[in-house]
Image (cartoon, rainbow, N blue to C red; front, side, top):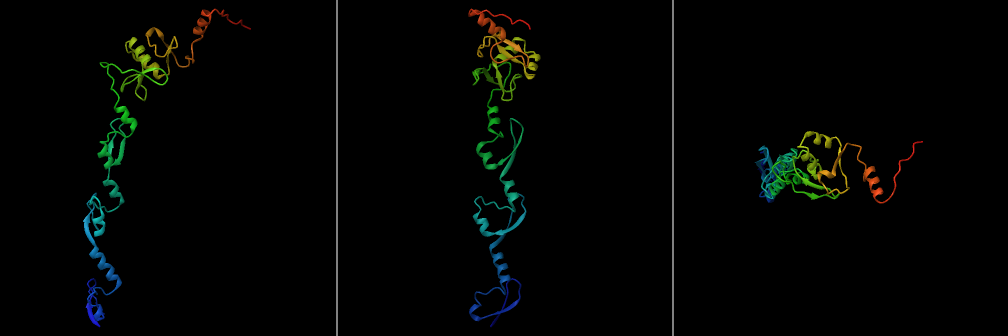
Length: 227
């Protein structure tokens, strides 16, 4: 037996002559420590710069070359927080997503709003028909706009006719409606518009309009006698 000295704990141990060349450690515990020392290196966390001790294999396999001390640092390094330019909401996204899209908005809805024309008295509105047959325009900041920044033309014309006074805006916010006297929603001539307070705008035509139509058709309308 030949006496050797352990490279880890410096303890003296003995091995057969045939095992001397390959022997460096006195025990399995020292061998485990030795392999760890040979396979690990000191480096710094890419996020918090804390010194960490990791396997060389982990560094070699890292696609970006960045090593992190824990999952929290990994997540923090790859994410960024920004404020939505439309609603002001704080958004937490991956850096790669932000860089690829030049992100400024938290959702497609906020992006859509940002593309809309900003209203001012100096510009003309681009009118179009909605699915209900009303003439509308999209205008951010318009006093008569709803949550989707849509303005109905009949309200806009009625407001303009009354010198853009605030009581028209208040009437809209309090549930008032504008009735089209001839029933045509696209006919927004001021003489065809009638303001009706909340609860006084039934579906279809008014009672008087129905009476006038029937009389024009030759019918005689009489008021029922009181019981």
